[in-house]
Amino acid sequence: MKTSKQIFLISINIFIVFLVSSCAKNKNNKTQLDTPQEGTNVETNTYQASLTGEFKKCYVTFNPVGYKGNHLFKVYTQSSTKPEYYWGFSIVREQDLSDDVYLDQYRIIYCKEFIFNGREMLSTGSTLLHYGESEFTYKRLGASEPTGGFHGREKFTEISFLIDGNLINDSTTGFKMRGCESFTYIQKSIMYREDNAHTEDATHLKTTKISDGGYFTKNIITAKDMIPMNTCFGSIVSISIDVAKQGSVDNKENTVRFNQNGKRKLEGYNDVLFVWNDTKKLSANIESKFSTYNMYANQYIWDTKRYRKYYRYFQNTNLNKGQSWSFETKVIFDKL
Image 1 (tube, rainbow, N blue to C red):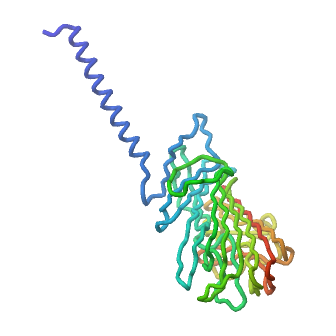
Image 2 (cartoon, rainbow, N blue to C red):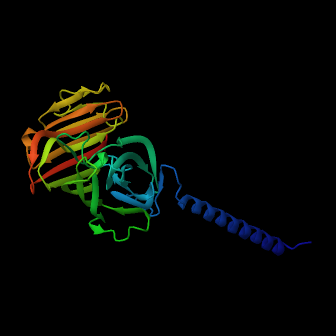
């Protein structure tokens, strides 16, 4: 017969085996959670939130081959009213050097809504910025398409990426969920005419900063030769339907409901516009400032089935050789 001491030792050994087995299982589960899941909308945070539950205002993820084999930055900026909500911007390098497109440049292509649980960014399925131009472009007199950004005919010559003002020196190594206050990219580029000779039209300096629940973009163009402007879209934002069901230019007075009829809404000589969606509980405030013709710049929302595209522009003027214009746009998203 086994003594009571032997029975006690056997019980202890069984408990130790069980404990070791459980630890190994938990370790394996943790490894799976920490592994990035390709093709999903889940962003794993390898830098855990603090014990107080405070989240960083901004997180940055970089994949050097994440967009068609080129650079992809995902930048999450925190809602000012609901700290568990983040707006996830995708900044990519687009490259297509065919004569019809002729582009190699960085730009914002999307912004989507996420909830952060302290470990993962979980997509809600709502889009804030639709695929399209959300920074700057212009249309030369006689051209069939605008120049720059989404529309092409632009190649960068210099590019810098900064987290909290500190330059990212390594563009070959990816990283995930770096906590910070802000992300900025600064791009110098050449803009080209709509011809197969790729005649240089202007230099373009674009500074876009993502922080505080939105983004700010400043665009400066300097003519290399006189540019006859049909339309200069100094401020352009591809707001999604998820954000814009209604809109106003004067604190929700004279509210317009969008109905996807393809017409211009809220048109006028203004520099501020507010849109919102009560169902999705999302909103956007858009402000812009031009260095020239600011008082005479017209703004409107193009109400389409794809998006509610915001334009602020002026027309029929020349940008002379050596002359520079600058345009600033600030967009703040929020949770209602």
